[in-house]
Length: 193
Image (cartoon, rainbow, N blue to C red; front, side):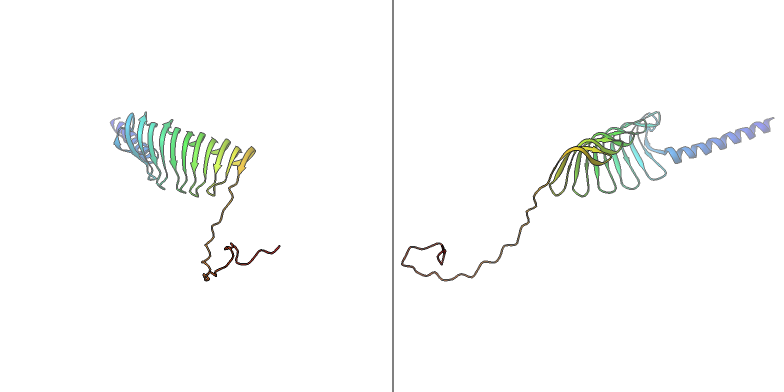
C-alpha cells in the first residue's frame, strides 16, 4: 500500500513539474516584482516582455509590452490585452496612438506612417472605418468617410499644387550703357506698334 502511495505521489509530482514548465512556456516567468497581484515584469519564452500591473496573473491597468521583434505597446490593458488608450510602435516604422479594443485599434486614433502620411479618425477592428482625415506627405489630404481602410462615401480631397523650384540662370554679360540725348528708355530698342 505504501508503495502505491509513493507511485501516486511521484505521478502527481511529475504532473506538477510538467504543468509548471508549461506555465513558464505559455504564461511567462516573473523576473521582477509581483506578477500575480501587483507590479512586475514577466518575460515570455518567445522573448516578449511585459512590465506593468497584474491582477490574478493577468495584465491589467497600465503597462508596457515589448515584442521580441522590437514592436512595443504602452498603455492600458484589460483582460490580458491592450484595451483603452495606448501607443503602438510597429516594426515597419508606423506609430498608432489612440483607443484599442482586444488588441486592435478601435475608436478614435491617429496613425503616423513611416512614409510621412498621417491618418486621424475612426477605427473599427483594426481598420479605418467611419470618418477620418488622411494627410499625405505631399501636402494633399482626404477628409471624409472610410470603409475597410478605403475612401468610401462622402469626402473632400484637396490636392496641393506642386511648385517646382528651378535653378536660376546665370546673369547675362553686361554691356556698357550708351548715352542718349533723349530720356533714358527702359527698353534698348523701341517697342514696335
